[in-house]
Length: 170
Image (cartoon, rainbow, N blue to C red; front, side):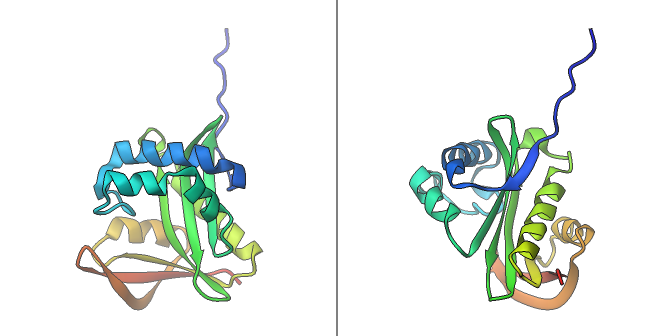
């Protein structure tokens, strides 16, 4: 019998009805990565419960300043990317998270591309990403996605300066 072909995960803009599945994703991601994960640094279990609450997520999904993109494999959300509008024409990539089972499959790149596409459709002209000054892996990821070093430094994370990479969308 021929081997069944599996469909690649679907990457799409989030919808209001994704709240409970996003809550499950956050819990799965937390179990895999823990409080040291990017975006969760220093968080406690109570923080996760607040972030993963469906009502909290419903508010985030309807926020006019957030763009959330999800990757789903059947009924399960296995990855997400978030960008936040910072000015009338710019946004910042807040984060990309993929479950370990799908790590190394290029899903993070697909999430980034869909987020950039969504930003372009919303009329934004540029997207910024902040990465740790010594985080060459993250910087390389964004450079591969077409971002360039802006030469700017913006804030700190874990007492390390953050450098800014930028992608023009126009």
